[in-house]
Image (tube, rainbow, N blue to C red; front, side, top):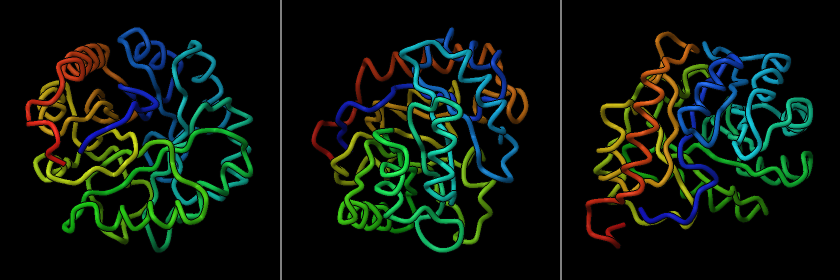
Length: 246
C-alpha cells in the first residue's frame, strides 16, 4: 500500500508513566499513546495521562486511544489532558464499536483534533475497513490517518483490541490497493522484526506497545532504543518491493 505523509513515524503506545514517556522521546519516538480503553492493562486515568503528557516536549504527539467512548467524553479528555490526536481502536461494527460517524462527531465536540482510526486486516483483507472509511467520508468525517492492526474476534472485549502481540500478515497487506490515506502498521512489532515489516509493507509509520515492554505498561529502555533505531532506518531506506504494487 502506498502512503502520504503520516501524522507520526514511530509511536510508542500504552505509556503509563512520565518516566516511560521521557524514555520514548529520548529514543526518538515522535508520538506517544495513552490508553483510555477499559480492560486494558495499559489503561490510565485522566490525572495520570496529564502527568504523562506534561513530560512530552512540543513537537511530539500525545495520542489518546479510545474504544467505543462517546464523542463528548473523548472531547472532555482531549481538553483535560492536552491530547494532540485521538485514535479510535474499537470494533468496526457491533457492540463496543466506533461507528463511521465518530470522526465527524469528535471534530464537532473537540474542534480540529486529528483523528486516527485503527483498521483490521482480516480474512477478506481490508474490505470491511474500506466500507467503514467510505461511510465515514459520507458522514463528513474522514480520519487523518489509519493504523492497520491484526484482526480480533468480533466479540472480543475492548481491553484486548490492541497490545496483544498478534501480528498482521505483512505479505497480504503489501498486496492491498491503496486506501488513499496516510497509514501506519501495528500488531506484533518488536525490535527484531520491525525493519522487515516496513520493508515488506512499505509502511512509513509504526505503532508498538507490547513489543517494547518488560511487562504490560512498563517500557524497556533497551527495547525502546532498538525499536526506534530499526524503524527509522527502515523507513528511511524504503520498501524492497517494486513501487506501485498496491
